[in-house]
Image 1 (tube, rainbow, N blue to C red):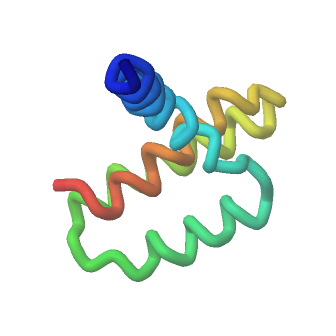
Image 2 (image 1 turned 30 degrees about the vertical axis):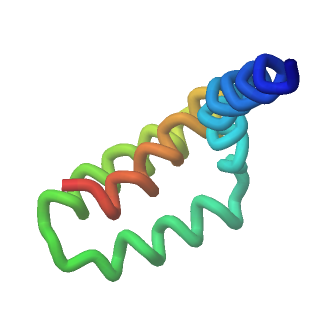
Length: 84
């Protein structure tokens, strides 16, 4: 009897985790500057170029007051530092 609610709760939690993870990126000057500093320390040229491109797009989106787009690009820049 208790197994069904536990399985349902686990399923809902698994679906909600990616959505919650996306909200952790904040698009503000401090985050942009922190990402710039981290990108400057990247040794891998391909990672550095991709992250810098994403950061530029994040800055452009922030200037245009499109915070969702800014968050997306900033998140991609941060993820790009570790990817590849």
